[in-house]
Amino acid sequence: MNSSSPICVQKALKCKESAPESSPKPQPFKKSFVSSLMEAATLRTPSFKEDSYFIPHLKPSDKKALQELKDKLQASSTSSTSMWGSPLLGGDEKADVILLKFLRARDFKVSDSLHMLENCLSWRKDFGADNILEEDFLGFKELEGVVAYMHGYDREGHPVCYNAYGVFKDKEMYERIFGDEEKLKRFLRWRVQVLERGIDQLHFKPGGINSIIQVTDLKDMPKRELRVASNQILSLFQDNYPEMVARKIFINVPWYFSVLYSMFSPFLTQRTKSKFVISKEGNVAETLYKFIRPEDIPVQYGGLSRPTDLQNGPPKPASEFTVKGGEKVNIQIEGIEAGATITWDIVVGGWELEYNAEFVPNAEGSYTIVVDKPRKILANEEAIHNSYTSQEAGKMVLSVDNTSSRKRKVAAYRYIVRKSATISA
Figure 1 (spheres, rainbow, N blue to C red):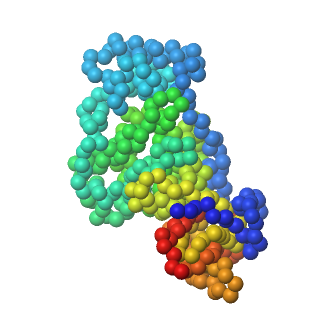
Figure 2: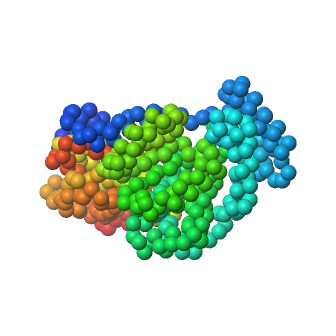
Figure 3: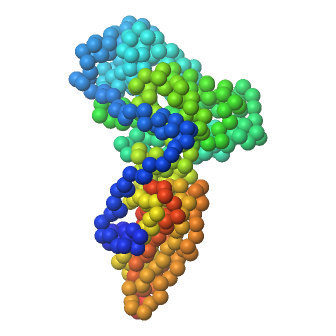
């Protein structure tokens, strides 16, 4: 295997030995009212900085609140006070992280935090949350990897949970999952199981990964039909999983969502707003690439990750680049020997451009071989995955032509070259 062959990225057919340059700021153009609202909603979202769980970093008043919560919990405890496999009165750092989450959710008001914690302990016992990972939810296999699922990590190591409820616009599917109260209860149990899978990956230690990322796809989501289920999920998570989400990314956001956000944004705390990222339809890949590497992003969202990839260990790293408006980019993968097989993945966020692949032999007089014919890739097409076995030494050239567009687009590719075990004379 060889994945370190020299790569030359050409722009507008002019070879550059270095990686693609960062794109310049786009020229200003007249924005619509809706576009302005969408942009405003995003720009007003300050960057989120996760709280520290190192006890020495806490303010004196916060340290005092933590000790008071421990004392009150000790005094009121009449049964087991374990949560996520950790005794809350054990005095270890995992217990401190959990208790601090409840304190932060109630602004370090000890009585309110204790009340929330006791209610959560009671709910977990009644709900059977501690053993829910062992349950087998028959009839929900079709929702795995579609409606709610853990998939990969963000750039900082947080597990990522994807949510997409667009499939429920199908009335038959909706009735099958939410048709009556018992079905709704079963769905809520399944949804809690998905969240617990993510929490099971957390460290619960100072300096560790102590929260997840939520990515919610609003495309085709039936708002009215899912109102009851959505409210119950939101209430359940807010009451029993405090400070478990580091960032909430909303993608494929319809225009009316941004209007509502603009209206209610002034009433949200800076802490709450700092966790929100809002991305309109067409900007999904560009938004997700800021927080998640492309090899960890599902192919349906402009990434390179397919469900089967996770069966083969950690994903192979990808190289990221940008395609400016009015530009053609050629990626040259050189040093391919005769008999070697090259396998590649390539994707451009929002495509709507032309792609092709060619193998160019080194030998003078040999003909260039068209591997992928030039064709326009539609916006909703997933990453291209292909392989080619060379009969002679040469290079593979992957081309993306964005000359008919003014829009800058994010992109990524990766490849592996496997040498032939035996090469014929």
